[in-house]
Amino acid sequence: MDIPKLFILNETIRNLYFHVCMWFGMMILFGTSFVYSIKYLRGFNLCNDIFAHNYAAVGSFFGILGYATGTIWANYTWVTDQSQSLGSILKEPKLIGAAIALLIYGAYFVLRGSFTDMDKKARVSAVYNIFAFAMLFPSIWIIPRLVGSLHPGAPGSESGNPALNFKDIDSRLRIVFYPAVIGWTLLGVWITTLKIRLQLIKDKTLINE
Amino acid sequence: MNKIVLRLVLCVFSFVLSAVCFAQDTKPEMADVMRSNGKIYVVVAVCLTILIGLFIYVFLLDRKISRLEKGKD
Image (cartoon, rainbow over all chains, first blue to last red; front, side):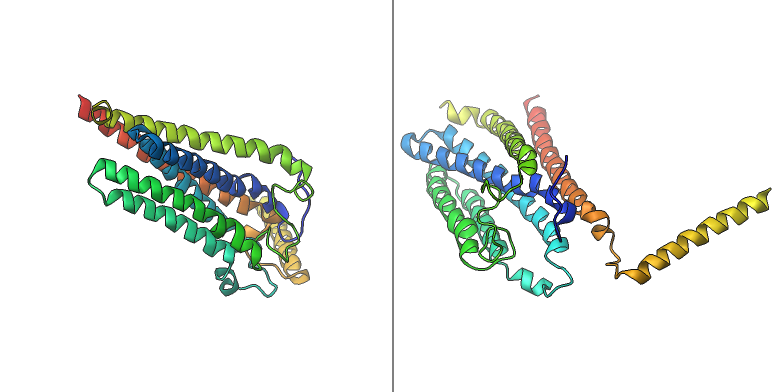
């Protein structure tokens, strides 16, 4: 596929199909987890808790992959022979925000693990999951866009909202990008359903009681 | 015969070497595989990270399922 020719980024713009898709997939999986947490709190059906837990688990995994790929990409595009050094990159609000968001989800799993009572665990972690999803928005979407950042989307990079802005992303990239988002998300959903089925078989005796 | 081949090989090798040296003289190279060929190897690294990550994750899931199967028998 043909891609736009860019300075500094060069061929690495192709990472759009991998790195950005990981975060899109993560957002969709966390969103699904959020919906199941609300569903659990409405009816206290333990199945919904298993769904919420596993969607959050695979979502966090996608987040970690997005973070890892982001570090590789940043290492070869942000650290250039201009003034940027590793020190200035470690201060990136986008990196810190994403790390906070992932740590909040990490705390969700710690919280789940610390309960012995099934119903209490499900109820408290459902409430916490709603809070964690709400915290995603300031930490990875809003704050990095208020302060200066090397990441696209920040003021100063003049790109507005990357990926979703129809004037910004090249149409040649969009042909591959949107199907890639759908594909990676479906892969995540498939892995999640495998985990859910496994958990449902394990907890069969508990759920049918 | 062997000598001629050897000479040819040496000749070609010296040409390549001089070309490499010449390239180094003209522009400052970052001396880094990842920055060569329009940084395409960065994309390769990102791809491999995701693939290896997914494989490890699915492998661990597979092991969990096998353990459950063994427990049933």
